[in-house]
Image (cartoon, rainbow, N blue to C red):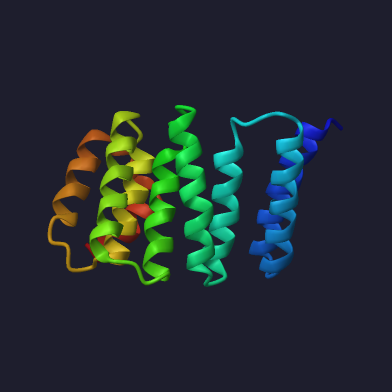
Length: 171
């Protein structure tokens, strides 16, 4: 197996380990995979791998560490014009900032940018994830129900997803 694909396997395996109740081991494995990936000379998926690591940190209650990972991921994605994963990185950044105790205006700005990025990609799934995060972080946001209806009109297939149902039942 080439070092490139081995780094992929290690990164995804590390994320799976963290979901299996071993976040510290999973984070170590993803961090090692990031280094292995870097050594191959590849850069395209580095923001994605950093997002995996940040997601582990968020799940482990380490919001400040996740913010560091995600700021680097977002900066790299922007500098290399890697937009396909940017909405998720920004959504995760908002969650990490909340966990780290950062200001609501900054969190809202991240979610707004995540939503704009998702909309520019015409990605209903990313838009829905952003709206769900906003609902979780800012439950009193009265515009969420209207935005969910609008999203359902543009992407009717989303009505069948667990995330849509969860949001519809809580909105």
